Length: 464
Image 1: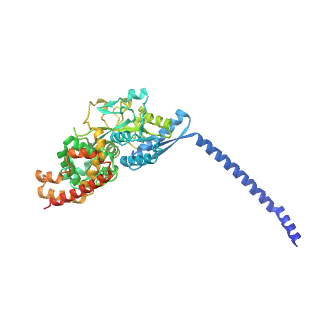
Image 2: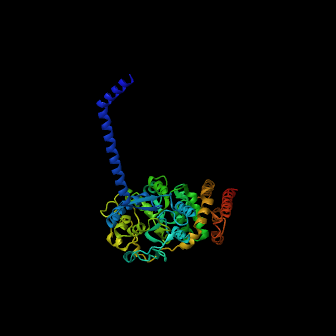
Image 3: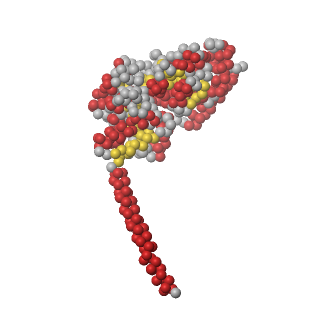
């Protein structure tokens, strides 16, 4: 029986089953052959693909315009493909914290090639920490982008950073919403503190935003310590809420949820280009604003140094600078969205005359309000924490008391009450001295808690 069973099995195997077995074996062989070929192709493709890692607080629209064009440029220049990894930590301050943490783990390299965007103060801080590597750009680029523009440095002496754009800081407002309330558009910082704008402003927490931080410093520098704090306090009192992102106040103005916001020029310009100048407006307070370079730099221990060098020069080319300056409708402008920025390349300005989103040409400007960026970089963290403690962490008390003062005094609060209401917890001299000690975390935390207590007691005491 056993032999017969085996014979039957053998006969069965020799029939249709044998055919299926051969088919399966053939298919398996073909699959492994294709898989092997595919793996070989992937390996070959990987060998022909370079990499670039960029850390940037720039908004997504800049990434979407520049990265695809760089891929094409790189392929044309080198015959190789490029993979660009774009890291976004949520803002300039968060990006700096990310780099400090990376270098704390490995002092040789943060495994990032480039830091791009965020204002000069961030790059001064990075340079002082030793996180940047020198890269002298070509003579051709230097002939098109001078060392200074409108009195503003376009690169530092060591050439560890280079400006790719410049930014102005001012007031973004909703024309239609203002018109419905029969209000004039605010054009100076102190106008933002007027009682008519109570609960009608949106601001960004400077601990999350480099542009918000610099605008606070502009007010203090242009108006003086005491008067500057009066204006900042009134502006904070008029603020509906503080946001974590610089783009949120812009959206609030566009939708009419608030009437105005302190804003960086390119956020405003892009919205005005899309929505229309009849609906939205932007003002640079005369004599009370600065031009700030928006730099790019190669980081210490960049794993893809040669690729990084190509990208740095790429974003300074006239053809790429026009992406920043032109509206989307222009043939040589951006493809996806209007960026609304001021470039730094002389040829780009010559080639875009009469077509730019922002008419201002810094090459025809002699100078602007000068801000000591070295001092700002040294004091920025202290100022951010001070603003956070007395305006943001205590905002409900501040706003309630400011509303009460407005009701009591009408449009003009008494100077005596206003001085008491806006008095900061330290003098300018004490503020500057404290900046040198701010690396002491115990001192920092203790001082911030004292400031919060000072602010709450001040706002509540003024009600007595």
